[in-house]
Amino acid sequence: MSSKKSAVTKRLERGYYKSYSVDIDSGELSIPLLQKLTAGFENSIRRFPNCYVFRFKLRVPKAYQQDANKKLNKWFYYLAKKIPVSEAINMIWAKDMSDDGSVFYHIALFFRAPKDATEQVALSAKAFFTKTIKATWPHILFISDSNANSLCSFTTANIIPLNPSKKSYNQDARYCFFILSKLARKSRYPTNNLDDVFGIKYSRNPNKRRNRS
Image (tube, rainbow, N blue to C red; front, side):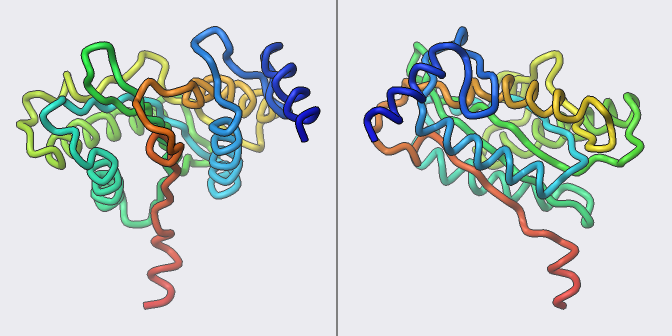
């Protein structure tokens, strides 16, 4: 067992985990968190073969940190109710702490993309989710939405399309995992429980729910 761990650690030091390249330059990665990330990532792209992966960060001010994970869980299902009725979403989250003691979450949101999605469709999806996230996260925290820009942070190139009909699909998926590997960094949040700092959420499939009714 120890030799296997050693082999995994050596590969990780070279920037690889299983069949993926990982980002070892952005901080120390955790092998247990990489295991969880891999499972969440592969389950998500099986659920949504054609999908967008949307990356962003949610901040929790110090005064609102009690039960922060419960607030995130509540927000996820609240967000799911705000998207079109025929859609479902997956979320991978990682919790960290900044130098000033405030908590924040790195989020990767997976949702279905049209098979013939264009760049314009991707930009529209990005705009919709940006607007909806900025409206829903302050609502869950009971903070004025005038603070949305300080609570929700979106990187410039934060939406990645994955389409299995494209020849570059495998390359695109591996690139996506490389970007998301940052979520497996060792957290600065003080806990020994990995479930406190990393999680995966799946909204219900609305089509199945509708078929049962």
